[in-house]
Length: 109
Image (cartoon, rainbow, N blue to C red; front, side):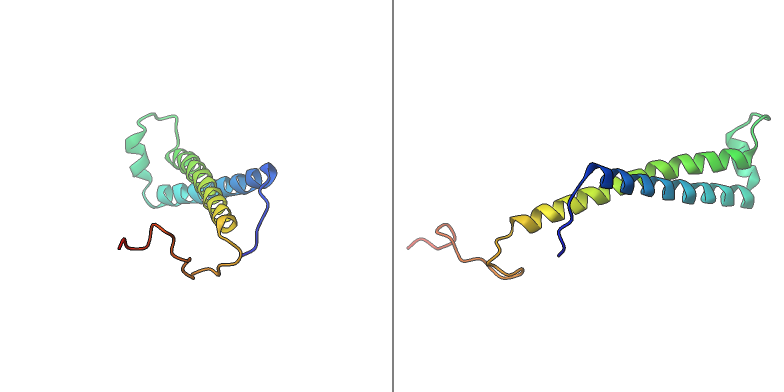
């Protein structure tokens, strides 16, 4: 497995790109939901000044930004844990092989 170096710029860019992708997908979902059922959002927002489609797009984009950023941060955490685990395995033991038994693994006689 290739070891990648972690830097603040790399983590920032990846989480930001995940947030932007979430914003785009959330906004598209909100627009699609408002296009299919425009009366649905009008029930939640009784103000006449707000357009239901615009509210749906903004709420979808906001929720998508939060979810995308959380997913990007989670992915960075998983990658960090995987790299720590790869560094902690001894080089002389191949992956999947059992380690030699220790003194605590042997049954007492």
